[in-house]
Image (cartoon, rainbow, N blue to C red; front, side, top):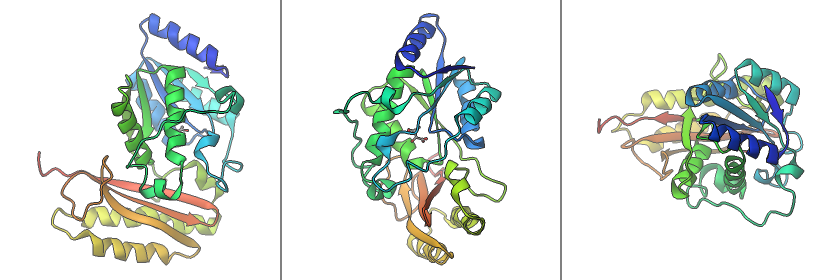
Length: 284
Ligand code: PAF
């Protein structure tokens, strides 16, 4: 696998590959790769014939006091894992390479960035939309793969690509979970054994809701009950538990269209998110 650190070199190679008629499939990541990321690489191999993985912990999507400085990093481990899974190119720019001067341009997706995580992490999704746009301009992919684990991010990227006519096929891959159901996340390594034990309840609550909610179910009382369970977890602070349409992220009272139940819970310094998609098959 080839490692590239320069924007110019990546752009030149992408241009050459396109001229040769190769199809570029892209997996943008912030590194510390786990099985969830590797499943995105598997999907990318189906989506194209040259797979590019980027590893870049993007400073502009972290707010003041968030975990940018302590976000786990392991570039040589990432390189081995990505190569082992069949990636062809690892793009690993420095912050100076990505942001050589004060950035005066930002991409902002409205409305759907004002709810869920976006309401609590101001500026986060414009940091994501901007860096993903930059990465698309550098890697010039035909297809890009993202995880359902970050459901709101997936909705933001899909909306941005639609609104700005970006010529990139977006593929969303289901969340990969630990044996006990905890959604895989680079942040899980920062949980203490005690926190890790309680974190299993996040997915249990979501699976419980998925198995109970039917099109005629009143959702509010079920969410209240689930909120009480999560708030009662020792050391946990529930940020939100909400059901919204997907990908429009409108509030929904009943399961009458495709929806996502999403949550964010803090265990001390570690903020975990998870979600479950509910497909409404009534129209089919
Ligand atoms: O999901 C992530 O890891 C990041 O938000 C992304 C898409 C790589 C942008 O920095």
